[in-house]
Amino acid sequence: MTRQLGPTEVKRLNRSWRRATQARVCLLLESVSQPFNVGSIIRTAAAFGVDHVWLCGDTADPMHPSARKTSLGTGRFVTFEQVAGPAAAAAAIRSQGLRLIAIELADGAVPLHQAEVGGDVCLAVGNEDRGCSAGLLAAADQIAYIPQVGRVGSLNVAAATAIVLAEARRREWEDGRADRLP
Image (cartoon, rainbow, N blue to C red; front, side):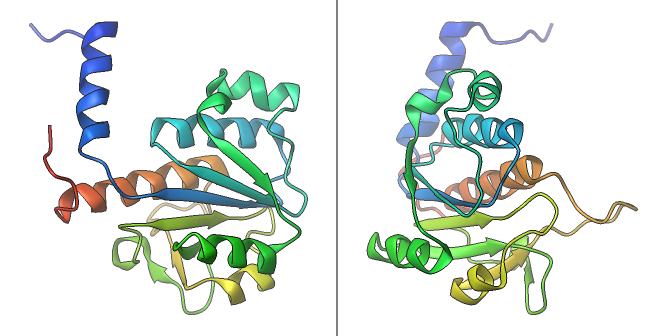
């Protein structure tokens, strides 16, 4: 009979995946204005081992009560840095040796499965309604989009962030960058 893993088994499983993970994955949030979305992104970032989150534009404060409630305290596992705008963010990201990949439905964007999201990377997402700014798109090394086949035009920013973080880690593990897989 199949059963859910217990807390100790989950910790062991997660620890084995951490040992198989070496790439630095970071995030840039540009004008993600809703605290609940920021909180959800923080929780997902902590789950996928995001090293650092840059915040620019009108992004909600990760310490906002609604963001903290949604993140369930996982903000303690992620570091945050406020930057002036997309150009300053791109400079900070590149100084850390990371590629900047913007996630946006835009001209010239490639499907996520073809994007260079493996390895050391910073994934950028934008405002809930307007997406990534023209300045961020211009600063990005690459622009990628999440292919969708349904009748909905776009995803919630927190859901999109979860998808791209999962793909970045999957790519690392599949490409053999990890020493061993669990």
